[in-house]
Image (cartoon, rainbow, N blue to C red; front, side):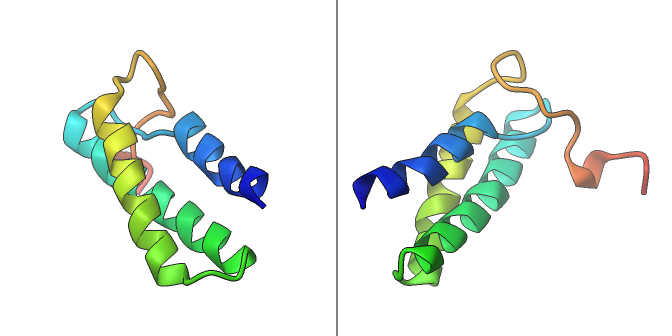
Length: 83
């Protein structure tokens, strides 16, 4: 069961965050982490709200502690000119 919980964490770190500023990366990392955490918790039969909270915190940390040189998925949705 522990191997299954490593998959969302690995995906979260791989998709760390979008944007160039630290705040953009932390916000998008939190959103990605919350989604991954809630999904992972629900799949494994745990509390989805707790999973979202933990995933959001880990995602915000991953986004805030990495730079766009490490992981760059482009501009976040709220900075996109396509809107």
